[in-house]
Image (cartoon, rainbow, N blue to C red; front, side, top):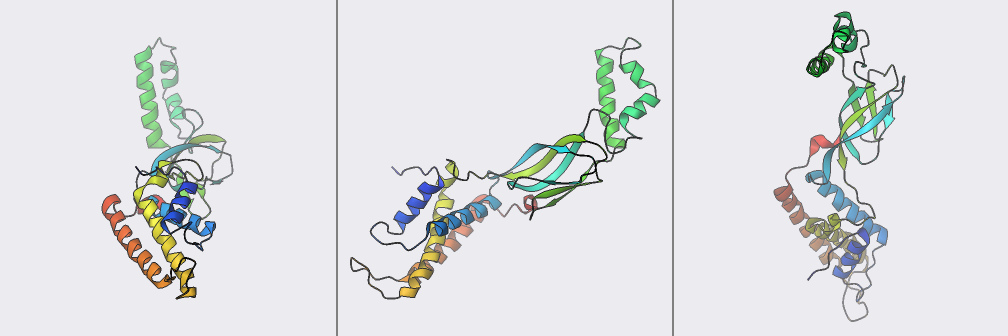
Length: 247
């Protein structure tokens, strides 16, 4: 039974064995293997809805500041729903709370006239619907290169809100079943064959201990062929790239 790969180091060891280590002296730096694994995970993420997912995070907004730095895992921002208590929004004059006060609803729903829970719920529904119609929502502009989001218009008061975004799952060095994904394992190996094939091509025909002859061109072509086949498999199994989620 095959051993399950749970982290990046175990995947590196698996790749080295597939390339012939420790029998062969595989001339590939650890950093090269890590880069190839990261490239495989990144490409897989662009196609798989399991790696890039819809999420929400709380953003604390400061009056007069319109640009905020987000975590690197955020790949796209959809919207920002700000609140500082019901009735507070971008437009203070036309806020639902102010409109209800002018129409005399505040005293009624606050219980001055003996209104009950049902009346309170009706009032809250009215408040939410009016807020959607009369207050201007913030527009968001996300910069995917420096991972910042700009709020338009510039906030006039301190508040907090919910930022809806697409987040990429990145296990880093932690244990994760992502590294045991069939496609990621074999695509990482194909990339390593390409990079190692280019290195071996410098020593064409050289005999190594044990009598084997280095054939960089063959290994390079093998890696390219496997890479192309795996990319076709990715599109068939996971679909086209999730373009709109990537800023």
